[in-house]
Each structure stands twice: as structure tokens, then as C-alpha cells.
Length: 399
Image 1 (tube, helix red, strand yellow):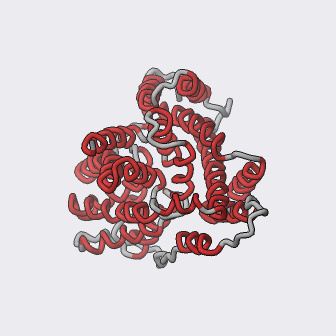
Image 2: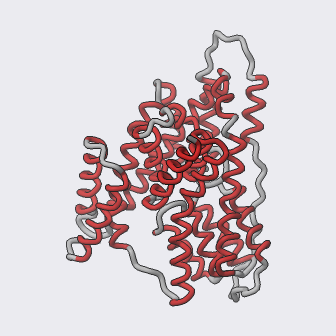
Image 3: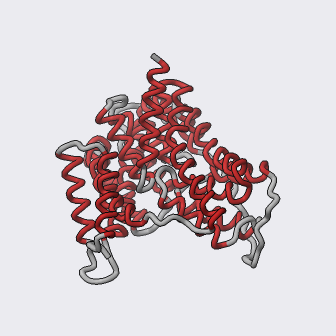
């Protein structure tokens, strides 16, 4: 029974890692479709609780969701199998690109395929958001909290984690039933202990012309990425800031161009963007460097989830922390909506008249109908849209 479950986890998350274009929001949408709607391993409410909790710890959210689900479905072995299976495709593909880059000094061009995939990813995200929002935004107060959190992020550019905490604490106070004469007590102490994280950010040094080191100790490379994995809130853009400050400016291990190439690889390969670490590790120290960098940046996620997962039911069992978690869930959906709007603008607009990408919009609309009306699997949407994008650019239908 256990081995059967482990096999199911491995097959599912390897597939999702292989087709997981579009970043963490798209990954979470695909995971939700598979484990909640198709397989019914979790309820929507449980999935939302995990999503809200995951947003409050460092690391890649989609990878941590995979690890959570693996732990719930098959225990400690499931935790490892689900996480490794989800990460592995990105690591393997990135390693191949790194080998090509080191040997031939160039990167493969797959932009036509990505052109078709991106609008389909919007449809997958929309489908997930529609279902999650109906579960998370359960009343008018939660709707107001969600809108407020979305606006402070979109308009005031408040950090996402701070916005989630703000929404959660507002919900804990506003939603708490006043007829219960209880104080936050131990439940709030538990919550504060869970949310309190001390972080140390790399220091900045002056930018200058540097040469890439060819004799970097593996332990130092692993330690660098372990520190990043332990404090990384905010996803890919924050990762870029860490890498720029540490690898280019402080240590001088990479040139600016090599960093840009590494970031490009992370953007157009499927799976977690943190697989950029695999590319960098290979450039700096070959296969051993790729392994050390990959383990370093992803290991904290496994540790954080293992510590967090048993606490989620306890958070739900208290009236105070239940209100907090409800508000965080609604806020997390709001953040997904904001990110989706930004992704849609970037994907479906062009610099010249008519300023809208008609071909891309058509792919997005057709994909939305297929996934919402006919329940077409996300894997087929991604593959089919990629082929359509490739054909459209090859035939000159898209410029």
C-alpha cells in the first residue's frame, strides 16, 4: 500500500515538474487540479490551509506544497518522494542546458514553444483561482480583507509576506466571535512562534570587474545556497537580488553575463525557478557543484514543511488562529489574483498596434473553455499550446 502511494506521488509530481511552466502560481494551480479535483486526496479547505501556511515560510511555495501533499498522503517517505520528484525534471533539464552552455557557449532557443504555453498557463491559473476563491472568500469580511491585501501589494508595493501577516492579524481580530470570553493565550503564542523568523541578508560590496573563480570549495558553494534557501521570501525576483549581491559583487564567482544567462535558464525551463542554482553550480564546479547547489537551496524547504505540517491542524482547532488562517487563505488568493493580472498583462500585450496579442488571447480563451468546461488535463493544454505556438511562429502567423 505504501509503495503504491509512493509510486503515485512520484508519477504525479514528476509529470507536474516536467510540464510546470509559468512559475509558482501556475504550479499551484496544476497541483490543486490534480490532488483536489481529480484525485481528491485533499479537500479544498485543507489545500487552502496548506497554501496559506506555506506563504508564511521561506522557500518556493509550489515545491513546499508538493512536499506537504507527499507527507499527508504517504508520510515521511512521501514527503521526500513528492518533493524530489517535483524538483527532479527541472534539475535534469537545467543540467543539460548547463552542459551545452559550458561546452558550446550558448543557450538553446525555445521561445516559440514558450510563446504558446504562456497563454494556456493563464487559463490553468484562472481555473484554479475560481475554485479556490469560492472556498477561501467565504463571507463579506474576508472579501474586504482580500481586496485590501491585493491593493496594498498592487498599489503600495508592500512585501507579500508582510501583506499576508497584516491580513491574518486583521482577520484574527475582526472575525473572532465576540461571544467567546477567551483570550488568545497559548494559541497566539504558538502562532507567534511559528511566524517569527530571524534572517540575515548578504552584505553588498562595490561592483567591479571580476574574474570567475575556478577553485571554489564545494562546502562554501553549498553553504551559500543553503543560506539563500533558508531566508528566501518573495520568489524569483528576490533570488536574483541574492545572486547578484553574493555571486557577482561579493564573491566574484560569476560574471554579470553568466548570471543573466543563469536567470534566463531558470525562466524558460519548467519547474521551480530555484533550479537556477543547479545551472550556477554546474558552471562553477561541474556535476558536484550542481548537486551541492541544488541540495543547498532546496533542503530548507523540506525541513520547514516537516516542522510546519503538524502545526496546521492545531492552528485550525483554535478560534483565534482559525480566524487568522481564514484571513491568510483569503489574502493568499488575493496575492495570486494580483500576480495573475501582472502575468496576463506581460503575456497578452505587445509594444505595437493593436497593443494586444490576438493570437495569444485566442489560445488563452480556448484553453479556458477546455479546462473549465471539458476538464482537459493541464498537461495536454501545456503540450498542445506549446505546439501551436511553435507552429504559429514557424508559419509566420505570429511576429
